[in-house]
Amino acid sequence: ALSTAGALYSFGAGVYGCLGHGDDANQLMPKCIEALSAVRAVHASVGMASSLVVDDTGGVHSFGLGKKGVLGHGDKTDKHTPTRIDALERVRIVRACAGDRVSLLLDA
Image (cartoon, rainbow, N blue to C red):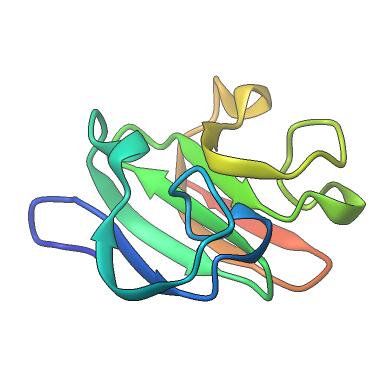
């Protein structure tokens, strides 16, 4: 859930850290993703076990299951908190789609 202020909330199954709260715990109620408190989220996409968030500067933050490299960090490591994708430093992304085995990004 994305608030009008750009805060992002997640809830449900927390496997592989896909909720972004730093652990694998399930959340039964919406909980603000504290690791994103310094950015204004404008778009979010959820895959099977990974999540992508686009901020108002065009940066992309990914978290969850890193299998097959779907998080975009050059490795297959799971991320339990949102981590900005450094390889996109000079690209302004406007939309993201997190899939089961693939992630897609649309630039401006």
